[in-house]
Image 1 (cartoon, helix red, strand yellow):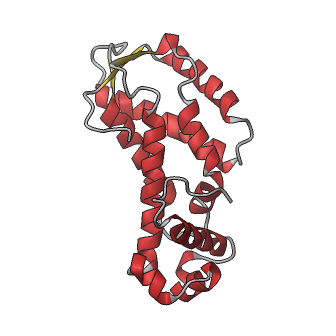
Image 2 (image 1 turned 120 degrees about the vertical axis):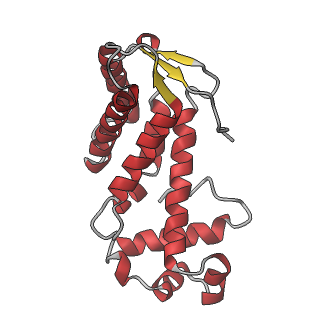
Length: 204
C-alpha cells in the first residue's frame, strides 16, 4: 500500500503502521469488531505506544479521515490557488489534481466506502466536497438571473462528487488523465465563468 506522505516525519513510521494495520483489518472484519489489541498486534507496537497517540480507535479513524480530507482539499485547490476567476471554456486539465489524489489513496477510499465501516463515509466525503465547492466557487453569470446561486453551486458540486464516487467505486476504470478530460468536456458544455471567492485558506 502507498505511504501516507502527508504524515509528520517525526511520527510518520508509527502512525503509518497504525493506519495500515487498521485498513488491513478492515479488509477482513467490520470496524466495530476490531479491537485496539488487534491493531497493535498487527502493527507490532505496544499498547503504550498506541495510547501515546490516541485515546481510542475512533481517534485513529477520525485522524485518518481528517488527514485524507485535508489532502483532498489541497489537491482540489492547487489548480486555482492563485486565481480570481475561472473561464471554464479555457480550462486545460485542472481536475487532474484532485483525481490523482483519489487514485493515489484509492485503496483507502474504497475501504472507507465499503460495508465494514459503521460511519456513512460516503456522506462525509460528499459533504466535504460540496462544502469545499460552496466555500470556494461562485457562479459569475448564472444563465438565468432568477436562479438561486447557492442551489446552483450545490447542483454542480453534488454532480461532480457523484461522478468521482462512481469512478472510485468502479475501481478507477479509466486513468485520472482521461477522466479529467471527460470532466472538462462536461464543464465546458454546462458552465460559463466561475468566480473564486475571497480566500480564507492556504495551500501549505
